[in-house]
Length: 313
Image (cartoon, rainbow, N blue to C red; front, top):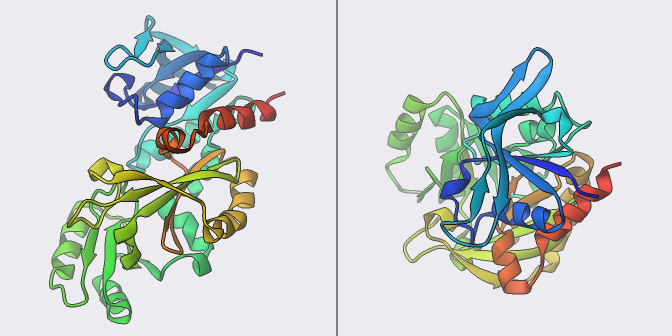
């Protein structure tokens, strides 16, 4: 049965169609006969009891530079859609959070993926706190004394913004590094948010694995290897994607977290695993499905749509 599908996303004209997961999800939806509409978060509104979006009908094709045809700008009531995708990239700031509050007004009558209530309450670096035995030693703090004490206990550390993304603002600090106070001063001067600090995992030199889960079940993994001389493995900052297999430890982690993700409506999730340790659970705008499809032939987008279609009346 054809569905009416809306994508809340960043401007589609600038995306890389060979890497962007939202594009692949839209492409698969179109192949299944669903109609597409897209709008940017700044064009979402609440108007006298109705959740409205100003956007355009969308047709996609796999032609770089000619990958999207957009219709005339129009306004529609999102409660008339069957599915709305929450797919804009972070930062996970009050603007992002406000969109989840607005989309709550139509869910679950209109299925919002991922469930906006739990996206709001399960940001990437906080949900892992529910599984301390699966994660490296971690602290969240704003005060310098706590950060220093953590490094005194654990030696080399990774320091990063609590609500950052794409590897931005991630620093490795060795036990004797004298820059902790300066970095703390810089971060706290531009934001009121805490920082997150984790024990550094040397296994990151062999890669940071992205495991994709659909409706709580693992479907595959890719490995992201940092450039020489770089700690960060995010593909946004030059990390190289490689073929990877799910290990017994990966499956153990997924078995622990999968039921919670499924129960909370987190249909498409990407977790980060370094060595044997879970470091993030990405629910806002996970990526990696195109790389997984190229390496292993796994059509994750089709599995995502099968999961969504099974939830609709």
